Amino acid sequence: MAHLEKAGIPSLSIIIKGSNVNQVIAMLWIMAFKEFVTISPVFPALVNSAKDRGIPPATLAVILPILFGYVSASQTTTMGVLVPILVPSGSSLDAVLYLTSIIYGASFIAYFASPLHLCQVLTCQYYEIDITKVYKLYWPVLAALGGIIMLYAMIATRLL
View 1 (cartoon, rainbow, N blue to C red):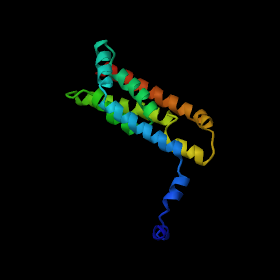
View 2 (cartoon, helix red, strand yellow):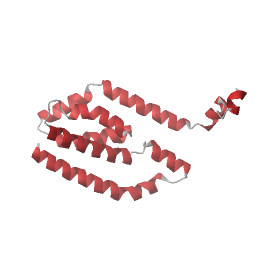
View 3 (cartoon, one colour):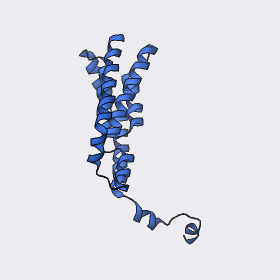
View 4 (cartoon, rainbow, N blue to C red):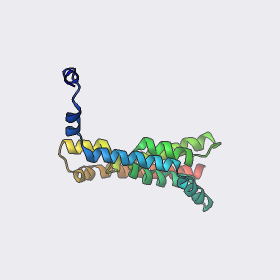
């Protein structure tokens, strides 16, 4: 092990000592949640049920990514799971563009606002900043982005 430390690689005891167990647990839960949702038939069934009730696809493209993205704190996961569910295969290119854009925007808002957003958590911990103060600064930006996404969804609903 001494040769590893000489090479600039820390020993296992230093790595364990410097790790943040809460963050490791949070990351594991996020990954487990993503895997559960990916294999679960719940989201496709929920989307089909909503469509049967006449809820526009653009509305689902706002609501589901916000809910999923807030809980998962991962925009990539949200896009990877929900785009195949919310953008039906065989859709017109316009529908694919509109729905994917709405899903992307809504998932970004949710990811950015999530208290599990790891970049934000790590930064606040490192600089010892109260996360509630950060949210007080974020809300106007998130509200503006939300308004733009809602307007875009309303336009998409009329066009699709």
